[in-house]
Image (tube, rainbow, N blue to C red; front, side, top):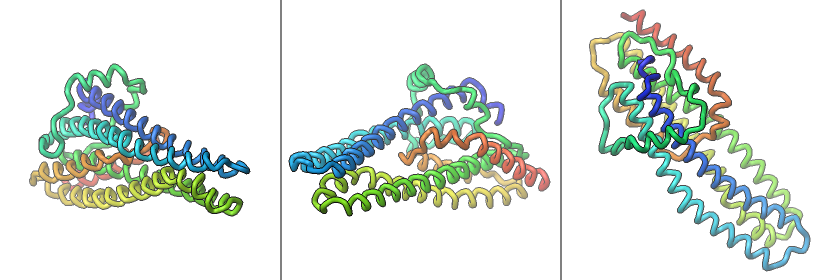
Length: 293
């Protein structure tokens, strides 16, 4: 399974999923940048003495229009592209893991044209996509599948907890800043030039922090379930575990369809270190199953 993931077919799928995830993250950056811009405009106007009444009322309207545009248009497009990336990643996993495809859950596979289009436009380092799953050395194929699924979710848990804490701290700092400015302005000016224009970035910060933390906790529970199942099956290799692997894969696919995305800089910042940790853990768990044989 480890060598199979580096062949041309599976590497093409990895390139495609990275391309579409990058596009979804680009849309996410646009949404966040717009939210930050509205907040900064409000911050500047609240600090300028003698702001014209017309300007005070225009800014909340612009902020409201941007919020609608961000949620109705950009966020929906982000969901669509994220699901396409998740579908391609599901094809990579099911092909590599030799699991059946779930038409009713996932839908149709990505077309060859979509994969080829992504391959042509992908500008990242393709060498970083080699050895996607590492340290898998259990005595049976589906035990290795359980290890791969566990490492995928465990990695996700770490990243999301880190990012949730970062976003939570930044949101709190911004909120404290606005409250501090409030003491220097009259309440009406503060609400119209600061609070309402900042609503989108504050809402984004709160929902991003809570959603990433919620997803991390739900994945953490499944990581423990996978570990318990692996230890049980490692001592009873006669039993077929394909059905259990497919059920865990359903959970993983649905989580990947969430638009709670991690920025690339956060992802790659700790990627090498996390990869080494997962490789070591998978090797240790593989030894448990070998000892049981």
